[in-house]
Length: 139
Image 1 (tube, rainbow, N blue to C red):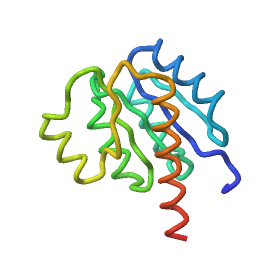
Image 2: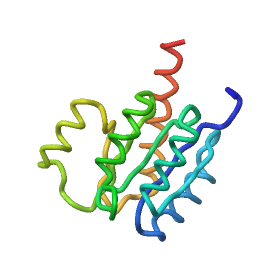
Image 3: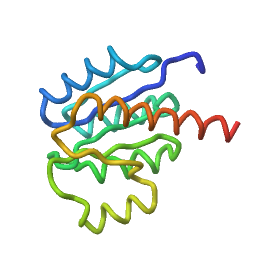
Image 4: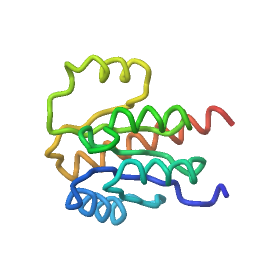
Protein backbone atom coordinates (compact mmCIF):
# COMPACT_ATOMS: atom_id res chain seq x y z
CA UNK A 1 0.00 0.00 0.00
CA UNK A 2 3.04 2.29 0.07
CA UNK A 3 2.47 3.30 -3.57
CA UNK A 4 -0.88 4.86 -2.66
CA UNK A 5 -1.03 8.61 -2.75
CA UNK A 6 -0.98 10.22 0.67
CA UNK A 7 -4.31 11.60 1.80
CA UNK A 8 -4.80 15.26 2.61
CA UNK A 9 -8.21 16.25 3.95
CA UNK A 10 -9.87 19.61 4.33
CA UNK A 11 -12.55 19.97 7.00
CA UNK A 12 -14.62 23.14 7.03
CA UNK A 13 -18.35 23.67 7.51
CA UNK A 14 -18.32 26.24 4.67
CA UNK A 15 -18.81 24.20 1.50
CA UNK A 16 -17.36 27.00 -0.67
CA UNK A 17 -14.02 26.74 1.17
CA UNK A 18 -13.85 22.96 1.02
CA UNK A 19 -14.56 22.98 -2.73
CA UNK A 20 -12.07 25.77 -3.41
CA UNK A 21 -9.25 24.19 -1.37
CA UNK A 22 -10.03 20.72 -2.71
CA UNK A 23 -9.65 21.77 -6.35
CA UNK A 24 -6.68 24.03 -5.67
CA UNK A 25 -4.67 21.36 -3.81
CA UNK A 26 -5.63 18.58 -6.23
CA UNK A 27 -4.43 20.64 -9.20
CA UNK A 28 -1.30 22.14 -7.66
CA UNK A 29 0.28 19.55 -5.37
CA UNK A 30 1.47 16.22 -6.77
CA UNK A 31 1.35 12.87 -5.06
CA UNK A 32 -1.69 13.43 -2.84
CA UNK A 33 -5.33 12.40 -2.78
CA UNK A 34 -7.54 15.21 -1.53
CA UNK A 35 -10.74 14.64 0.43
CA UNK A 36 -12.96 17.40 1.74
CA UNK A 37 -15.64 17.31 4.38
CA UNK A 38 -18.18 19.78 5.72
CA UNK A 39 -18.97 17.49 8.66
CA UNK A 40 -16.08 16.92 11.10
CA UNK A 41 -17.63 13.70 12.42
CA UNK A 42 -17.75 12.15 8.94
CA UNK A 43 -14.23 13.47 8.31
CA UNK A 44 -12.99 11.64 11.40
CA UNK A 45 -14.77 8.44 10.33
CA UNK A 46 -12.95 8.63 6.97
CA UNK A 47 -9.68 9.28 8.78
CA UNK A 48 -10.23 6.28 11.07
CA UNK A 49 -10.85 3.97 8.10
CA UNK A 50 -7.82 5.25 6.16
CA UNK A 51 -5.46 6.60 8.81
CA UNK A 52 -2.34 4.75 7.62
CA UNK A 53 -2.59 6.62 4.32
CA UNK A 54 -3.23 10.05 5.82
CA UNK A 55 -0.46 12.65 5.73
CA UNK A 56 -2.29 15.88 6.61
CA UNK A 57 -5.56 17.14 8.05
CA UNK A 58 -6.48 20.80 7.55
CA UNK A 59 -9.35 21.83 9.80
CA UNK A 60 -11.34 24.95 10.50
CA UNK A 61 -11.55 25.90 14.17
CA UNK A 62 -15.25 26.64 14.54
CA UNK A 63 -17.62 23.94 13.30
CA UNK A 64 -20.83 22.51 14.69
CA UNK A 65 -20.69 19.12 16.43
CA UNK A 66 -16.95 18.77 16.73
CA UNK A 67 -14.67 21.80 16.66
CA UNK A 68 -11.28 21.86 14.96
CA UNK A 69 -9.30 21.47 18.19
CA UNK A 70 -11.29 18.39 19.19
CA UNK A 71 -11.01 16.90 15.71
CA UNK A 72 -7.24 17.37 15.49
CA UNK A 73 -6.79 15.92 18.99
CA UNK A 74 -8.69 12.78 17.88
CA UNK A 75 -6.59 12.58 14.70
CA UNK A 76 -3.28 12.85 16.58
CA UNK A 77 -4.39 10.34 19.22
CA UNK A 78 -5.25 7.89 16.45
CA UNK A 79 -2.10 8.48 14.34
CA UNK A 80 0.59 10.80 15.79
CA UNK A 81 2.53 10.88 12.48
CA UNK A 82 -0.22 12.76 10.66
CA UNK A 83 0.45 16.49 10.29
CA UNK A 84 -2.24 19.01 11.21
CA UNK A 85 -3.11 22.58 10.26
CA UNK A 86 -5.74 24.60 12.10
CA UNK A 87 -7.49 27.40 10.18
CA UNK A 88 -9.53 30.21 11.62
CA UNK A 89 -10.74 33.72 10.93
CA UNK A 90 -10.71 34.31 14.69
CA UNK A 91 -7.74 35.23 16.81
CA UNK A 92 -7.08 31.94 18.57
CA UNK A 93 -3.44 32.64 19.52
CA UNK A 94 -4.59 33.64 23.03
CA UNK A 95 -6.70 30.51 23.52
CA UNK A 96 -5.21 28.34 26.27
CA UNK A 97 -6.24 25.04 24.70
CA UNK A 98 -4.75 26.15 21.37
CA UNK A 99 -1.45 27.01 23.07
CA UNK A 100 -1.42 23.68 24.90
CA UNK A 101 -2.11 21.78 21.65
CA UNK A 102 0.69 23.67 19.89
CA UNK A 103 3.11 22.64 22.67
CA UNK A 104 1.90 19.03 22.53
CA UNK A 105 2.12 19.04 18.69
CA UNK A 106 -1.58 18.24 18.37
CA UNK A 107 -1.55 21.24 16.03
CA UNK A 108 1.53 21.43 13.82
CA UNK A 109 0.72 24.82 12.32
CA UNK A 110 -2.07 27.30 11.83
CA UNK A 111 -3.35 29.55 9.06
CA UNK A 112 -5.47 32.65 9.49
CA UNK A 113 -8.43 33.12 7.20
CA UNK A 114 -8.74 34.51 4.67
CA UNK A 115 -5.97 32.36 3.22
CA UNK A 116 -4.15 33.19 0.00
CA UNK A 117 -3.71 30.18 -2.27
CA UNK A 118 0.07 30.61 -2.36
CA UNK A 119 0.21 30.57 1.45
CA UNK A 120 -1.97 27.47 1.50
CA UNK A 121 0.22 25.64 -1.05
CA UNK A 122 3.40 26.57 0.80
CA UNK A 123 2.04 25.50 4.19
CA UNK A 124 0.74 22.20 2.77
CA UNK A 125 4.07 21.49 1.04
CA UNK A 126 5.97 22.30 4.26
CA UNK A 127 3.78 19.96 6.31
CA UNK A 128 4.00 17.17 3.69
CA UNK A 129 7.80 17.50 3.67
CA UNK A 130 7.87 17.24 7.47
CA UNK A 131 5.52 14.25 7.30
CA UNK A 132 7.80 12.50 4.78
CA UNK A 133 10.86 13.33 6.87
CA UNK A 134 9.17 11.84 9.96
CA UNK A 135 8.31 8.66 8.06
CA UNK A 136 11.86 8.36 6.70
CA UNK A 137 13.46 8.82 10.13
CA UNK A 138 11.33 6.08 11.68
CA UNK A 139 11.89 3.44 9.01
